[in-house]
Length: 187
Image 1 (spheres, rainbow, N blue to C red):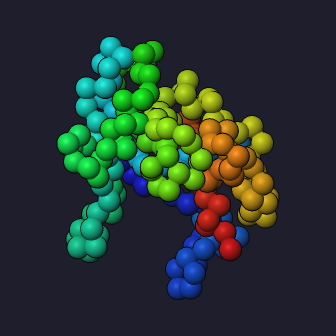
Image 2: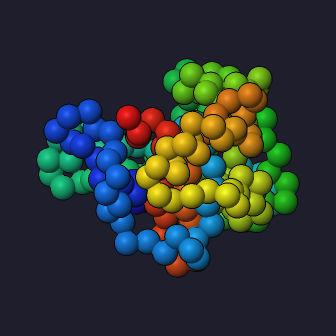
């Protein structure tokens, strides 16, 4: 799994917020923009509409980063561990019938996950990697300039959440590349 690049240059020496310098060479015109969901990244393996394996994202430690390991990976979710109970609840509360067999990166979202920025009542999984699900969070009006995005993200309501702003935008190109921006990236 590769980290998704932020589209603007970040002020690393100061507040780590972005400035107006676009730093990605990306074909926005042929990409699909979607809402970035604020939850916990997981991966589910589905067979015949049933989750047979669940994994969560693991980021490299400082020591691993010093040794050149920069990209995150997935580790199995221990269903007995209390630290995973809300991810497990999200998986159990989601209908996977109709999901093709395969490994699907997704987002666990809900009441007890990441402070519940989406104001959800329960817990669920959203498979953003599955095109038929991704269509539900597609944004036909997402700009990609600094000034327009700053305004857009300060006013655009989430299509999944309840009475809240969306976290950000992810652009998906047909060649598989992706880039992103989050509301909190701006000053």
